[in-house]
Length: 78
Length: 405
Picture 1 (cartoon, rainbow over the protein chains, first blue to last red):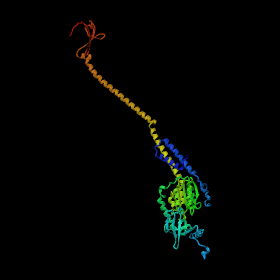
Picture 2 (tube, rainbow over the protein chains, first blue to last red; picture 1 turned 120 degrees about the vertical axis):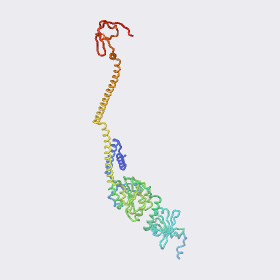
Picture 3 (cartoon, rainbow over the protein chains, first blue to last red; picture 1 turned 90 degrees about the vertical axis):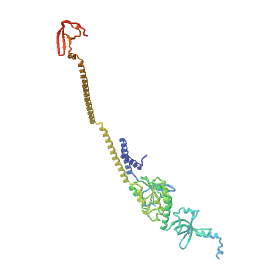
């Protein structure tokens, strides 16, 4: 399962702390470092590619449905 | 005569006739302004009171099914606006207003009602910090309940788009007027059925009357019961509604609510980059540590040092050899001393000693055989006699056997 953004940042923070404490074997530190760099890239990519979708929730005959909400339309509603 | 023309009513018939006229519609849905007195909150749940002004009085009853929506409790002397229909209480033959709604009349009364509800809900613990739900750090989808018109929605959308684009679900909500309370409650309930993980409940600034729906008990309870955390952003910075107290977080303005709802993308990018830098820095240090440890270990087996150590060993061996030689010499010397001592002792028993004491040794020539007996020689044998200081050549002239002992 894909990590949420929040989980990814928490994981990255914990890796940085582990490396900061030191006392790791070369293999361990290389593994953590690699994972950390990967997380930095992933987080940055996620941040850059974050897209916004604005929808409107409509209640009709007790049923809920959503439809795209065009920001330009605001003001014309009601 | 009038009564002859129209006939005679019974009391009940008369009452019904009056009732027919009074309830014909002219006095339905009327608002009456007055001051409450003789208020009785009957144990049946119905409320009875008299509405009066300086000149007149009006009997009022509010049945409990209407009273349930009452946003404050009636108090003697309270100035109110009541909405109701005129009716006649047949048993007593009095007309009365069947009240469906009561609103505080005037700012003072609104504040009184506000204070009343605030105290009540505070006592119930609806504002307690332990009931506050924590907001998601990185919301995935935010529900926005506010009016489709007005600046609030625009402000929220703008701020969120700028800071951190996240999916939004907008639900048009009536935030002012008679239908506002129900609309707000519906919106909260509808959003609770969706996958939003945060709700912003917003409304622009206005008078206490404009904001009144956000001071309704039902709205407060809807906010309290929401499964999803709610940020309230009602009115201006200085306006505090009951909704603000119940909400999980109160934002002074709709823009501020948007800022609270989502983190700033630039800040997060900086945070991530700082983490990345620390990652590299720490790893560089770790590698250096490990490298210097390795070179320490390497120093132990370096060729130059190995030779040095080898030379040390060789020198040691030389030293040991030298020491061995000295030891052997010392042993030999010791042996020699012992030998000399023994040689001395040997002198004492050597034939040379005998010669010194005056004895001699006789040898028969030419073979220098030791002469021990008369029988060893014959007449005219050549002899050599060894004495202390030399040799004497002689010849056997005669021989005679003698017994010396």
